[in-house]
Length: 166
Ligand code: CTP
Ligand code: MG
Image (cartoon, rainbow, N blue to C red; front, side, top):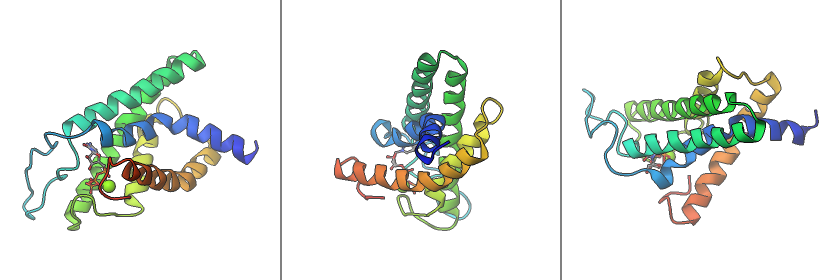
């Protein structure tokens, strides 16, 4: 397959994870998942950037994207895949924040490539029982996702949704 074709296939495969990862910027806020609790190191478990509303909103939005894919493709597998991709993306994002807090990075500080790839790897891990990407699609996702992530964050900053452009 041609490179543009492969990129299109990769984006189609991962789309619900992208939606789940991006939508909390708009849908999030309110009570943090960790309830403001801290670990023995004195730092937050996840921090105030990981909220219940963001998690549930991201899960819903990403699953809805999978639902639209299911309708287009005429296969319910995409709905289940959308749910698993979203759940994986949000759990990967949480784990990323957990690691950032443990190494002393405050909420919102950049931690490449953790910010860009953590959610991606967990999304793929979670969806594996249902849909596995080809090796080519996987490599393309590794290459393309950091750029998509940076561009999306920059756009969110321009739109006034995020303080920082990353
Ligand atoms: N967000 C949320 N709930 C989530 C994930 C994200 O409410 N589960 C919202 C927060 O407003 C967050 C924004 O989306 O600030 C951007 O997400 P992200 O970049 O992942 O969080 P950071 O603020 O950078 O925090 P961290 O350093 O923990 O990654
Ligand atoms: Mg961030």
